[in-house]
Length: 426
Image: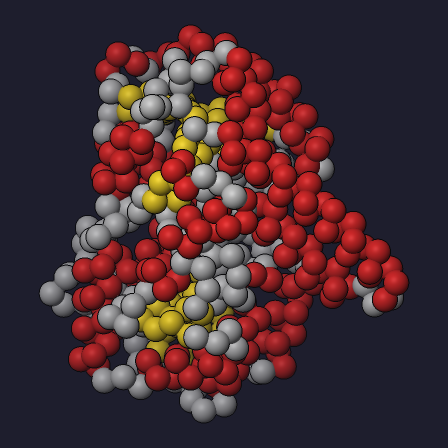
C-alpha cells in the first residue's frame, strides 16, 4: 500500500506511535486519524504491541478502516517493563532511518514505553522535529492501583502482604520516574482536561508552560433526528422492549473503573423497581481475573440476572448503536479518570450521563446533560439513577437535546488545528 502513496499530495506528515489501540487511546486514535486524513495529512502509525494483550480484531479494524495510511505493527514479546523498554529500543532503530528520509512534521506519541526511546534519538539525530505527547493518563498510577487491589485481595498473610506492598511501592516509583522522564523531555504535552493538566503539575512537577489543554472532538451521528429523538424506536430496532428503561455502562472491567460500585447501585435500584435493563459492555475482551469473578459474585448475590446483560467486546459500530438507544449512561469510575471518551459518545448520542465526582467528569457533565454524584458510594449512585428515571418525559427530552448541543462544542477540526499550532517549537 505504501508504494501507492504520493507524499507530495499531503500538507503535513505525522508519525503516530503507541503501545495501545484499545480503550480511550484506541477511540482517540481512530477519530484523530480520520480528521488528519480529512485535512490531507500523510499518516504513519507505528504500533508496539504484545500478542498476549492486544486485541487482533482492533488491529484488523485499523488496517481495514485506514487503507490510505501506512501502518507498522511491531511485536513486543516481553511484559516486564525494563525488558519491554530494551526490546522497543532495539526494534525502534529501524524507524530512525525512515524519520531521516521522510522528515515528518510531527512525531505524535501516545504512550510512554516507546516515547523515551524517541526522546533519546531526537536529542542526537533529529532535533528540529517536534515531539508531541498526548497525555491519556499516568501508566504508573494506573498500574499501581490495580496491582495493589489484587495484592490486598489475594494475600491473607500479614507479613508477606507488607513485604509485597513495599516492593510494589518501589516498582511504582520506578515506573513513575520513567513517566516523569517522558513528560519532562518531550517538547509539548497535550491534555484533554483541566484535571489532567493539574495532575501533571501536582504529581510530576511538569512546567505548566509545556502543557496545552486542547479539547478533543466527537463525530456527530449523521442520521440522528435533532428535532425528534426517538429512544423507543432505537430500542425496538435492537430488539429491546421499548417500555423498559435501558441503562448502559461501557467500561473495561478493572478496579478503578468502579464496576462493582455500579453493580451494587443497580442491586439497590432493583429492590425498589424492576422496570430497567442494564447493559454492561466491555469494549475489549474480558480478563477472567479475581475482579471479574467479584463482579459476577455481586451480580448473583443481588439477583440481577434478569436486569443485567453482559456484552463482551462488540464491534465499535454496535457500541454506538447501543449508546444511542440507551436512556442513561452510567460512568462509574472511582479514580484517575483524566477524560471519558464514552461520555462524549453519550453526548453525541443524546444520552444523559451520571458519574461520580472524580477526575474530569465534572468538566464534561453538568445538570443540563446529567448528574454528578458527590459521594463515591453505591447507594448515592442508586439515588441519582432513580431520580433520573422518575423525571418527566419532557425533562428527559430536554436533557437529550442539551447533550447534542454540548457535543457540538467538541470539534475535531479545532483539535487538529490547535495541535499543528503548538507543534511549532519556539
